[in-house]
Image (cartoon, rainbow, N blue to C red; front, side):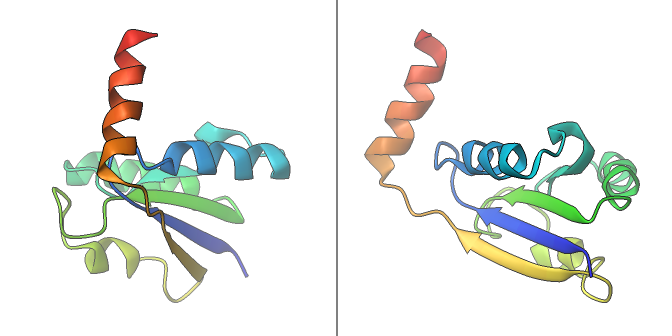
Length: 107
């Protein structure tokens, strides 16, 4: 059974860093299976779903599910029948998120 791994957290919490680490360990190309579950434009989201559904492992990144995203249930239910879903919340302090965000602009 294919997997959908959901990484939830605010900007700067390390979602992409964790996703990249998992993918490197599994030797999977990032562009093949990374999905932005917060993607605002529905047509772009649908195109990306078609791209990743071919994979046995999909990593979805999103806020906690109540931020700028559409209702997360609508996005996730597309996977429920055929995928085992693992969801992780990355807990990072506000200060650390700000430090990471500022650091991204100063490098």
